[in-house]
Image (tube, rainbow, N blue to C red; front, side):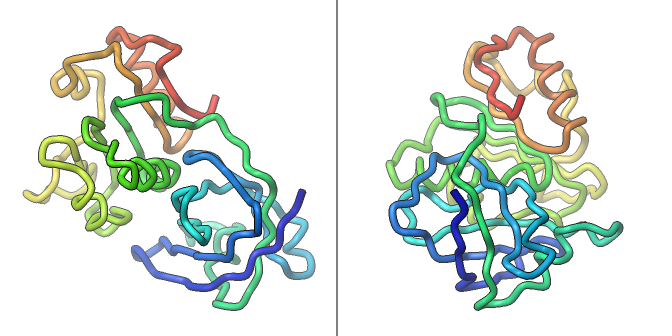
Length: 222
């Protein structure tokens, strides 16, 4: 069932990422980690649907979508980034395989952090975020989405912000390899949550399996 939602606020989070806060339809419910099919409520554009995850907690009075624009190629995200307060989106009922199954390790690449943001916000509301660990990989420090909020959520040692193309003393440096995970994770029997580009998810799930992680404890869009 389609729902039309009006944009209430637009925030610039990074040089190529914006947050869109919209009204929440009456009775609309979803689980943290789920996504929706989203389109722009304008002629022609309304027929083009793309999947985006909710970044807001299910308890929030509004909906939030955190969307990265890919300016190096023609695409729908560029049209979304042109939207202003008062414009409308069309969303579907929620769907998706990512959901919280218990304390564990979250591994995100770039904009793949978005479904995890919803989970973290919900867990923080319930005072249940402690004990979870996040590995968040980005190219440079200017690409880190909601860095200040994440630093406020996680205790020291449980937040690992990693840069692959910038050597900065405030962050870890390098790629998340099998050796990287082996050195930093002691328990591979716990839950692992993975989200990011397809190649990133493919590589990380492969590393985790080789290190002894249980396939049923790997949470990602299959």
